[in-house]
Length: 257
Image (tube, rainbow, N blue to C red; front, side, top):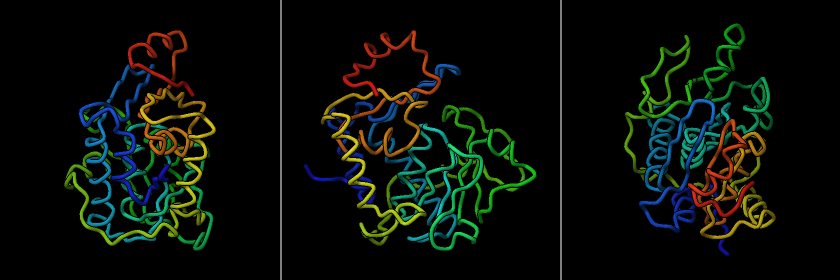
């Protein structure tokens, strides 16, 4: 099996799009809010491309810039991560599990170039905001919901990202040895890890994988591993276990993580 890596974002999206361009690649549920958002590979790729444009053209970032993603598993988180990797931007993965920014690796004492923060985390940090040159807040609601006024010092992600085209510009190629995360882990290493997790979890091409976001909040597990295996993924936040059997049947789930 060819190992897709986050360097080749179009290939990574295509790997999971085995059911056809009009079939969902990533579906997101929140059993508290009732949200269900489903994206094909083309649609998710469009959001990733817009994010890459926001970072490269809107923020003036280049390959090797550093981003913090302080977001839970969500379809918008997938767009941010895939867009950052498409632009060659190294990402901090630890934001959603901890109270503060993770900024390990070279230049750890310097502000990060950009941060993407869930609104509920911004509200808890008003007196001590994260150090980043560009800061975006995400409400993590449906794409059509009207945006709330962003906190001082932040811009609303969905408002800003819609200004950019939904196809990737011809950026300079990102090397697989380049850092994909701020701790120096390379794109190739993350690709290898994603495939290893997919194999350990017995994920197969064409699978429809349901992921409990509370149990698997690292993106290498809920996003990269299924896509690397050629599977599509249903990410469930605040999963109501009483609905699990119905969800498995409705979404034609073949694997549950």
